Amino acid sequence: MSAAPPLISVVVPVFDEAESLPQLHDEIATSLNATGRSWEVIYTDDRSRDGSYEVLQGLAAADPHVRVLRFRRNFGQTAAMSAGFEHSRGEVVVTLDADLQNDPADIPKLLAEMEKGHDLVVGWRRDRKDGFLLRRIPSQLANRLIARVTGANVHDTGCTLKAFRRDLVANLPIYAEQHRFLPVLALGSGARIAEVVVNHRPRIHGVSKYGLGRATRVLLDLLSVKMIASFSRSPLQYFAMLALPFLVLALGEIVTLLLRPGGVSFQNRWGQGAMLVLGLLLLTSVYFVLLGLLAELVIKVSDLHKPRRHGPLVGEAEG
Image 1 (tube, helix red, strand yellow):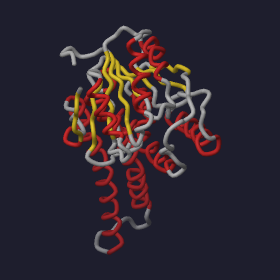
Image 2 (spheres, helix red, strand yellow):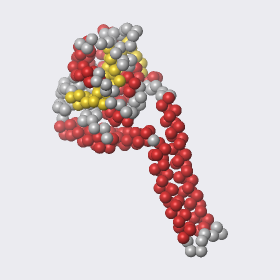
Image 3 (cartoon, helix red, strand yellow):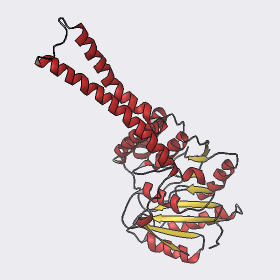
Image 4 (tube, helix red, strand yellow):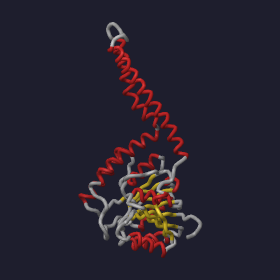
């Protein structure tokens, strides 16, 4: 492999796709060679059980463009994608699924859109070739919910076929099932996003890894992403909102004490208890404000020192 970093890195998470991999790699190579740019493809094997890793090793031995990562156990698609991001070297990073439903022939379309100045180009599977009840309807509902909650007006956040600029990839920490929220996370960082209609093909090998049970994880991750996005923009405001109810209760307690007939006597249990409650409410308010100030400091420092992930979890074999 050339010592100079390639211009394009393609990241492909792999789990039990042995039958699809040879055709997929041929299509990727054909598409990228036609661009005339240097490239690499990083396959992250999420501890497949069907011989996918052995197929990938064969591809790496035959093609110097191929790099193979393998997890020590199954971590999921998001972790596999994140590991590929971490090991990629290209100025532009393209992601796609290994099941042949994403069409590698669409990659030049994404690259052309990137040249217009966008930081992220998202594929839109407008004519999906999936089951209507179990895949298309849940996906449409999820996309509408994500758009309403986050404000990211992207038609198909779940489409894996995307193109990213390197500096954007380096600042997108993801986990759990959050790969579908990459446009949302990117939008929160001020990225310029575009959509491109892409081809979507029916699955011809293997079985789908997704089901309705995944919807619960998506909903939980949506809540997490929304909270993180709001929190990271201004943690002090976030904690101030938490402090506000306690401050209002404290003020109400003060008004009650001032208006009480005969005033407040610290010699009886009622007066002592009232002052104790007032003190706790005020201390809680101050506590949340101090947490907000501390969170502001932590976020500023973490922006300067972002740790690399998955280093000890993968092994690499290069052709």
